[in-house]
Image 1: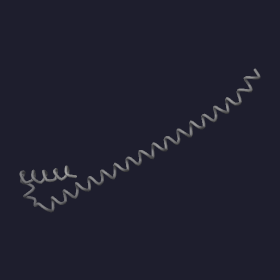
Image 2: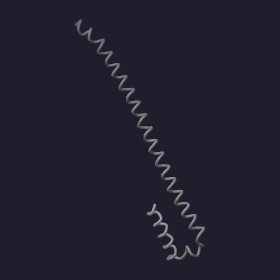
Image 3: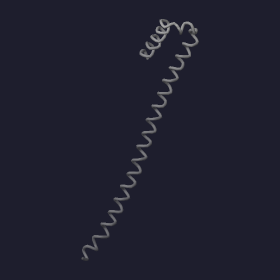
Image 4: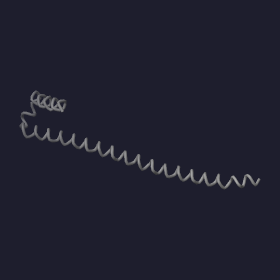
Length: 91
């Protein structure tokens, strides 16, 4: 009985310390994962923005280089698209 009471205080103390450590580790882990995901998403956003800017500049170049009649011709339009596609694969 006395031995049980003597061992109960250290046991409760150890449980409180372990619980506190688990809590802070969970908070720290959640923070790290969130930061990593934000960093990855930001990098992907920059890549997508750069890709869209390049495609936009390609389309702007085509619209300034060819008149409407040229682009209405299916054969000519296929040539333009083939050139744009080959430029994409060269990059």
